[in-house]
Image (cartoon, rainbow, N blue to C red):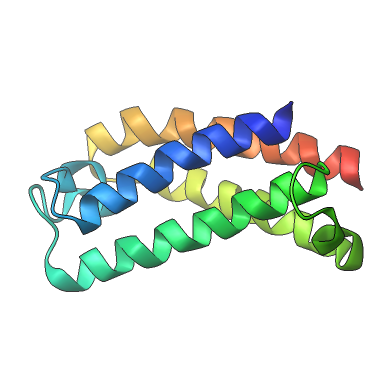
Length: 125
């Protein structure tokens, strides 16, 4: 169940990053609100990279739970801790953001990501 929660939350984050990459005017809710409207081209590329990284982390969590490609984490069991570390860093960065909107939206999401992936890691471990 925790892996599914992580996957669903990650899908929301991926959707947000893809929207930023496509020019959605939601910059106030990312990168500390430094670009309150549309991201410049370099940050749009960064949003695509972040979306891909989060998709990989979701795949790892789902693999650890035996829901997708279970052999991946069986071969490299330490991988399950990557989403935990990413989620912890994400929580810290979002909590420290200068953007109140970013904190309001992403701190709760990061908490869900951290709690769910930690539950996956501890049960897979």
